[in-house]
Image (cartoon, each protein chain N blue to C red):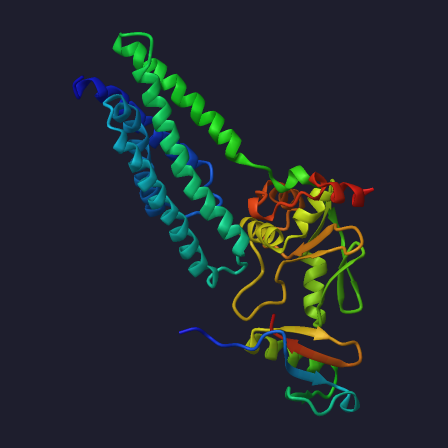
Length: 65
Length: 305
């Protein structure tokens, strides 16, 4: 049986800035500070088999390529 | 004309073809490392190919022209070899940390098919040399067959060797740097790396290289995604790569400089040896199917200047 995965799509959003995200399909994780943001991102990336990308405005996204 | 007269040319033809196939297997262990069973399969097919080639001349001399149709049958069989190789490599693709890519697989499959034809041809040439040898002494006949066989094997092998990436571009090592989260090699942006830890690993252990094509043909050939994937696969399998299931941060990557067609690549190897990296890139085979030759056309030449 072939596995089905979602690729090239935002799987999760991790942010320290509540104002810069909203709506959308992907789950949003709010972090207290940058350290926590990095940690959550790392965990999620490992779990989802994806990569962490930095959008530069305090928002990280997880995408599987 | 009796059977015994043909024993020598046929046996020598088979022997030469099979040995040639073995020789060709030996030189490409790197492309396809599956030693004992892979060897058995290909040696057996090589033996059959050589036998078919070796009996062709005696069959013709016996005016058994129908026997030549067997060569056609053989071609059909060997085409299946390509299918088998392609299929099995494709199935393995999901288990590779850095996949070979379709183009590389196609290239390898083609090589395996072609080498059976080479074994057949060498078998044919050797048996012909023995059969038509001007000398009647057995040892001189064997000698002429041997000489023709070796020469044919060397020439064909050399002719089939093909170009390598190092022949169409110059490779040099380049420092990796980060522009914010953007991983850059020279002035080419490769990807967005979010985690600070991952960025540190890239800076400490990553190796960057720029492949500068020597002409327009080279530029378009290197632009082919399959060719780039082949380079990444070879580099990763020879230098090791810091990758695993669920750890995709350090996936080796090669991107094009859109202005000049240069290729920028980065890898985080387990053995960070820049000399070995450059050597490996230089020795990656140039895939037949990826080669482009815009300079061979009038329009391509006009566009080049």
